[in-house]
Length: 171
Image (tube, rainbow, N blue to C red):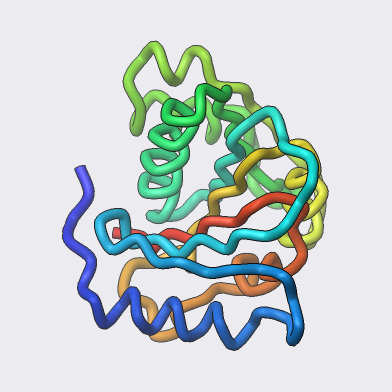
């Protein structure tokens, strides 16, 4: 269950996202105070066939999975959980399974697609993942109440996805 997100945190995130949007970009931005999320909506002509949730081995994965599973259900699309592996930690497949079964109900976890991308640059790998997605969900940063509202991955994705991007505040 989500904790309440303060309006101040969401305002800071929205301001940081707004500053990162490319000038003249044909993208709209909206905030979702209930979920602590900022949606960046583009003008893509084709729709993807999954809701992609990008997780890392940090505290933010719970919020990302919860939000992405809810949106996948609303849109009637499969949930795909993606982890970008840089080769340093062992067993990324176990990370995906553990996160799914820890944070989602058993049926949702069992039905979720899993994808491991091997790349040293998570934003680059996730930008490629966005080509098949109807929505890409990422965390603003890996830690709740971080001093910077945007981490490197979220910042690197703004304006560089082929689908709408949702950035959620970790709780």
